[in-house]
Amino acid sequence: MDPTIFKAYDIRGVYPDQLNEDAAWKIGNATAMFLRSMLRGYDRGLANRQSLCVGHDMRTHSRSLTDALIRGMNAAGAKVIDVGLIDTPQIYFAINHLGTCGGVQVTASHNPAQYNGFKISGLEAKPIGVDTGLKEIKHIATSLLHTRSAAGEMIEKCDLTKAYKEHILKFLDSNVKPLKIVVDASNGMAGKMVPLIFGDIGIEIIKLNFEHKGEFKHDPNPLVEKNLTQLRNSVKKHKADAGICFDGDADRLIMVDEKGKTIGCDLLTALMVPYFLKKAAGSAIVYDLRSSWVVREEILKAGGVPRRERVGHAFMKKTLRIARAVFGGELSGHFYYRDNFYADSGLITFVHMINILSASKEPISELIRPLRRYYASGEINFVVDDKEEVTKEIRRKFSQGDTDDLDGITVQFKDWWFNCRSSNTEPLLRLNVEAKTQELLDKQLKEIENILGEPVEH
Image (cartoon, rainbow, N blue to C red):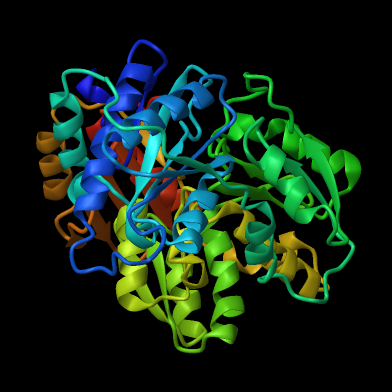
């Protein structure tokens, strides 16, 4: 088994060279052993507590990998509830709805078609990353010498569509306007789930890339601007109220306004702040440290408690739980909800945006306009040979600012700030800069690039 498939937050690699059915069996076996070992102190008497649930996405090799994963789990003595072809957030719902000790979604999220992987969750859908069990699962899996099954088949098939739809639509307000929204499913799981969930709520959905044919019209990564071209054009052509692009496993989304302009996810977070604090006055709201100053300002203005956090779903979810925050947003398009088991959901985010648009007499561009009060670089990537030395040089160069090391280095001045951090998944330094004027942004960006070198496309 290729050990490099084990990442910071999940398992991911090219099929079948790096990740295949043999590896899937071993990972299933190791995951079952680890998750069942974590039941100490919990009520083991619940019907499904020692079981695991497993779902998969639409990739051509996902079903085969799922079957191998389940056989490995069975060999470890675990019963498996197979919830079928689903979006990733549905595995979080399944774990809590069925009361299992955890679960696995077979998916490579936003990666190209030749990739696949496993997202593992524990009790209550808490994320299993390198610091919360993935290291142990890797150790067990890479130590297994064979994939011979010693236990019988213990599989239950379960379709959770009805319960899942009820869960998502419980967040929908009653005053939904007849909106027209373009949805780009990126040939991913939103192509199945959006019609099932939103087909009868009274809005017009113009569908893009809803088919599952084993290939992608564009890479299923909505953070890349070129992947939004079709969506932007369709919004303008159909005079739609907004456009939504989901990633491959539908746990993230990016939104464009009625003019086809991309809305940064930190601005979407800021837009949702008064909406959520009206429902839960004084609550905490969590945001990742790459977010615009506008997010903190809007939280304070609405009487909430701002909680700034490291990048990554494991950190965001942990802080949401600790703070009992009503809501959290990441620049990557992940949005997290207290009433969704502190987990992220693209479909629930879609519901909340429908609610906000339905309650407003203004178009989305006008709702966002007052939040565009700063100038941001967006995330820029650099390949750097010696990350540590370069970070030291940045620290020396900008030593007069207020510095913190929550995630990489963040330096704040009166009129601008930046964050430079190592990628958790790739050999890159990632830079975000924000300033009060475009001229200042350009000037400071150039100064930092003199240290980091030429940016690379991502």
